[in-house]
Every structure is written in structure tokens, then in C-alpha cells.
Amino acid sequence: MFAAGEVWLIKGFNKMDIDLPIFCAIMLNGYWPLQLIVYIVLRSRSGKKRELSRRKILSYAVIGCNAAVICLFRSFGINYLSGSLYVIAASSEIIFTTIFSRISGKNVTYSQYFSVFMVCCALVLALYDPDTKSFGNSPEETSQSKLIYGFVFAVSSRALSALNSVGAEKLLGKSRKTLLGVHEVSFANSFIPSLVLPCILKVDGEYTRWKTKFADGNDHMRLLGIVAICIGLTNTKFLDRVCKFTIVSRKSSVFFGVVDAAMKSAAGIGSYLMFDEDTDWTDFAAFGLVLLSFIPMITKGFRRSKTQDLSTEPTNAVENDTKDDPLLQQDYAVLPPDEDSSAE
Image (tube, rainbow, N blue to C red; front, top):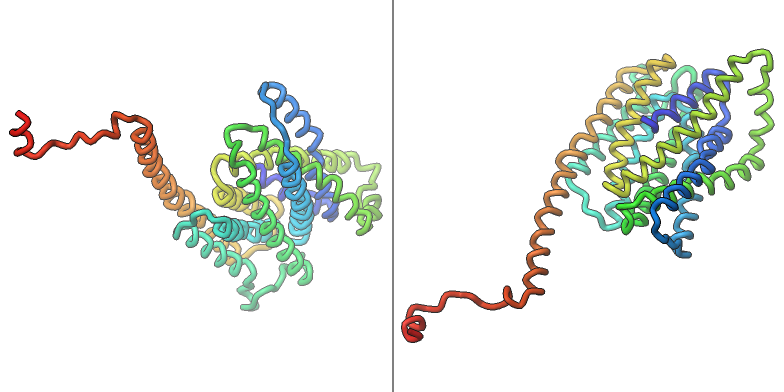
């Protein structure tokens, strides 16, 4: 449920009339000192020498720069859209993860394609307005331009996030049994955006609105709420990314996309209940399709791939044992009857 935390917390900011996407993105990536401490402790306890090659450091840098754009787009998407509409748009990560996994040479089953089809239907339903019987009409609290930009930002962030997941899966392929690689990727996803986002903040000038949004010295409860949300954004993102890359390394990027979509669907339902968002039957239908999409992805699709792995590994093991043992290479076929009699 850590993935749901950022949606609820940023929507809490919006309830306080605070709409600062870049500030939220910076807070989401502020956990890198904690991540560094955890990594140093784990590395010292492992007792193993782990060298970081130039190629791996470059890969971490690329993933980190990509994470900065992802976090910025995600923050704009959450601020511009309602929580329920954002999580439906965020479920598009299943589509992009499946596409990138197929391009990278991984096997994609028919059940996974069926899940992609259901997510596509959910996205269409989310944009459909039954009152006007047209697409793209925004709720009362959201302007038309914010709806379009927010949806584009949300889908774009999920496309880049899927690319990061597939890249991390390949990068962590040789160290799936250790947590060090997971924490290295998580640190890169926080430290590098913490360097990039302040530069974007300087160019955009959003910081000029911070004083008017936060300044209310007499309201101590409001100040306490702001501090609590900032701490929550940092810590939930730390736990979310560690869980993400652990799942990606142990399972696959496609599997994580399904789990993430399910968690974000729960976040959308929670946003509807907590913030009284304007929804209609198409939004609930879209939620239903997103929840149904991960059932065939997890059951039939992954069961099939697991069965294929189990059926091929023992065969290869027997062949290798036979090749290495000279006794097993001999031919112990029964001689024909006439040869047996002549031998006697």
C-alpha cells in the first residue's frame, strides 16, 4: 500500500489549497540519506566485496535521470487529476511494461495480452463522460486543460516507469539473491532526482509561490499537517521503491506492474471515499476492469511460465549429468537373442 500513500498525501495537500507539483516531487525523493545509511549497514554486514563497474554506475545514472522525469510527471498528474482518475491512468504501466518486455525478448503470454486489453478499455471508460456522451470532459473541480495535461503526464510517467522497471530487471539479473543491488538502484532513483529537480525548480520559478501557500503562522495545526505530509511523502516513497525493485528482481517487471496497478486501484477507491471526489459509473467500471486485469496476469500467465521453467530445468540437469559421467555414456542395450546364444 506504499504506492497509495503518495496519492493520498498529495491529495491532502490539494485539500489544503497547496498545489506545488515540483515541491511534491522533491519531497518524494528526499529519502536518499536514509537509503544511504541502510545501504552502508547492509554492505558492512554482508562481508562481501562488491565492486561497482563503470558500466553499472552509468546504468544507475541513466535510471536516476529517468526517475527524475518520472517523479516530476507523476507529481503533475496527481495534482492536476482527481485521485481516482489518476490511478486509472497510472494502470497504463501494465501496457508499457508488457510492450518493453516483449521488445527485450521476454516471453509474453496470451493472458497478459488480455490484461493489456482490459486496461486499454479502462482508460477509454475513464475519459468517457456519460452525461455529454463524449470524451475528455472534465469534472467541475478540474479545468479542461488540466484534465488533458494531467492525463498526458500520468500516462507518460507510467511509460517511463515501465522502461525503468525493465531496465532494472536486466541490471539486477545477476544479483537477484542479494539486497545490495536493490538498494543501489533505489539510491540512484532518489539521489540523482534530488540534484536534477532543484534545477528545474529554479527555471520554473515555483518556489516564488511557496511563501503564500505555506505562510499561515497562526494556524499551528495546518503547519503540523504540512510537516506530517512532507515526512510521509519521503518515507512512503522510500518503502515503495525498495519494495518495487525487490519485486522486479525476484519476479519480473510485468509482475510488478500488475501488483502496482492493483495497489493504485485501492488508492483510487480510498481517494473517492476520503476526498469525496466527483465520479460516475464509468469510473467504477474502469476500476473493475483494472482489478480484473491482474487476475489472468498473475494466475494463468505466470503459472504457465513457471511450468515451462520446471519442465526444462530437470531435463538440462539430466543431460549435463550424463555428459559428465563416463559410466552413463556407455550403451547398455540388450543384445539380440542370436548374439546372446553365440556368446554363451
